Length: 351
Image (cartoon, rainbow, N blue to C red; front, side, top):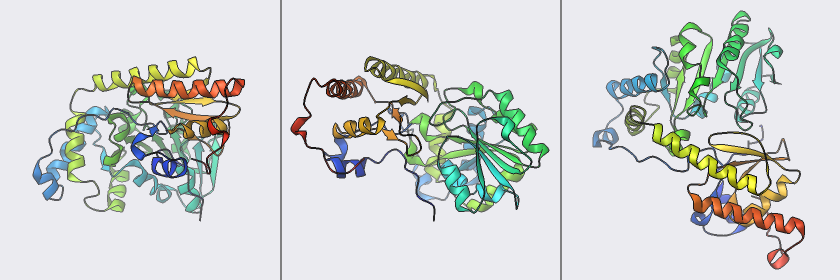
């Protein structure tokens, strides 16, 4: 069995190890809008009945318009993680998989757990005839690397010539719609696009995503997921929010990102990547900084494959920014030897 991938959001575990009440922690470990949007009204029947065709079709139409899919009707799924689990079924027998990395670790974990050979690649030129599936996260998590649509479509053409499929994960694409290739799926039957609903709208707990793909691929995913995979309330909520005004949501996220940038710059931390929803910083002693912030009940995301990196998400308000700034100020003072560590006793464990 493969080792589990460490993800952000482990506030309960962090609080158990470092103390404090769950609600007192500042969670900066995820890439989710820290200001969840107000929920639209959900009719009682959406809770009472199984989702009907009208409810599902309405959500698909709203997603098609929101993601500019050029007529393709996206398939609602219970979070994109649910279809990542199904990706091994798209790989032809005896073929390898290429994953553009470093990136979201679940792709490699799931594919290798299915017994597939996975190659980490960084350039399109590394795609070869032995690759039956390729995965690229665009913009990337955690580095923020972004390929232009023409580059993605060139990758799809290479994979098609080799009889393979290209999966493009656009989970962080809402703030950069110019990067999306969702509108090109209809002309590329080997192109599959994953979209996340919860990150931009701040509703990750809804567990909702969409797949944009050729009808044959969507039919396969629908069959594999089984009937009523997505709840009626999730469909109703997504229909309303994707049909509404989103410019204010985007502006709020960018305002929060600017606040984070200012805090990090003032603290002298090196920003090396990110998206609108998080920043990747590089520090020679990132693990110690991560622990210091845990002791201040601030959770960030560290990486087992690069000890120099921390991913830091957005605080919900200026008070959160100041709390992070104060903790980083104490860190810099400790590094300079200007102050003593309180009690000079480290807490047990890691967060």
